[in-house]
Image (spheres, helix red, strand yellow):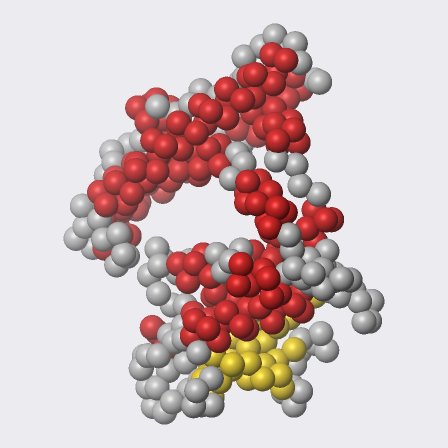
Length: 357
Ligand SMILES: [Zn+2]
């Protein structure tokens, strides 16, 4: 347990771009903020934040802050509980220190192992890629009245890519095409994403959409199911939510088509669809063991859900504090800001837990 090394690594990480010298970002941040404030003024807005939010669901910075602060208070309360759990564990180990920011992840991992441990291999046996894709199709049929018909006569950019025609389940009318580029290969971008090769519109004549879901699963041997993690299954449903957003497009103007919506709406369909994975309807039918065909046991689902809330205090406070500081920086107008000082004062005013930063 090299605590001093932890502290050193944490300090190096937290001070990126903030060490003086040629890679220091402070002066650039000041300049960016001043230029943004100037542009907002020229466009007739009070601040950059007001300009950016005018064409968003939130409409005003005040409303965005209200939402963030409503989450902030319970998130900080949860951090206090997490710290108490970690302190108890540290004391039991005889560590004889109070939890500092560089201890957080170290002890959080110990708490996770002790209380929320999940054997990913046990979970994976119930998560077959093909079955989950069928599950997504089923959900899209129930929620959006879509049906999916595999096509083999469509040109594709790689033999791994599969294509389905999406239809209206009732009328059989053509809705669009759904491409699935599931597997990793050299030269392919990492991660998982959705994109549209063509978006829906009817400016001159009706055009239907062509959307694609892309991921980087490791291809199995022929005839063997591809088993994926719970996180990857959630991501699969998430990205499919973006695809359904594209497929549900019903607009005249191409600039408004598919996922070209306001910034604080674009993740709504995908985040909502994620939740269908853990419904009993989907799990009972589609999360079935690759050998026995038996659905995933409820006790295992309960453990997955318990594990999913682990460390949420830290995760929420971490991103929310950044979002709040960012918002306040962009509300400050054209005053010359010292980013270091501004961040410190803003975090103090917010009541940032000292165990995080
Ligand atoms: Zn997304």
